[in-house]
Amino acid sequence: MGFLDKAKAAASDLAAKADSALNSSGTGGPKPGDADKYFHDLGVLTFLETTGRPADAAERTRVMGALQELDSSGAIRSFGLHTAPPPAPGMAGAVPPPPMPGMGAPAAPPAPAEAAPPPPAAPAAPVTPPPPPSWMTGGNAGA
Image (cartoon, rainbow, N blue to C red):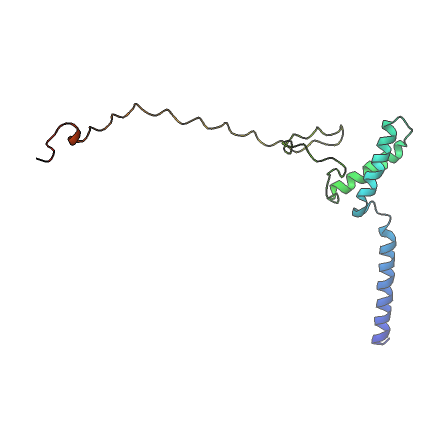
């Protein structure tokens, strides 16, 4: 077998491996770009349940499993709400609401701030003023 025949066989083998890898990649769980789709589906299922309409429990389990897998792999970039109104003036540092049951604990709150330092001590007893100049006391002025 010549060099070109070996190269052609290797290229064919590599192409077959690439095809099989691409075909199997679609069956291996959620892809990182699918987080928004799963969040949408979870929102629809939650809305149906909240309004008293039937929602498939198996679908909810499937969607939650996919989201938990995406979260554990770090594929979810943000948990920010897209339609929330801006905070009221002065409320930017307000404490967020507690998490929904079963969704894990939030990060620990920041440590309480140190107590404010005490006010400065009151000044010591008043200092006696210096004596008046000699020209004011009738001293020997101009003599």
